[in-house]
Length: 65
Image (cartoon, rainbow, N blue to C red; front, top):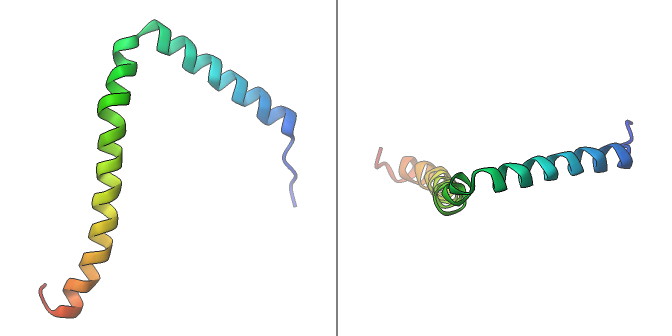
């Protein structure tokens, strides 16, 4: 079983955080676009997939398809 080195994970997490912060300050319009358009679209697509996966088998069982 492979163990995870916590210091390596923290270094990688720190690098990702600094990259994200630099890019947010460099281009605030893209940041706002991702927050106010990208996250709701992602949420909507997840809801669509979940509802589709629930209703498709029910449609086959009822004989609708």
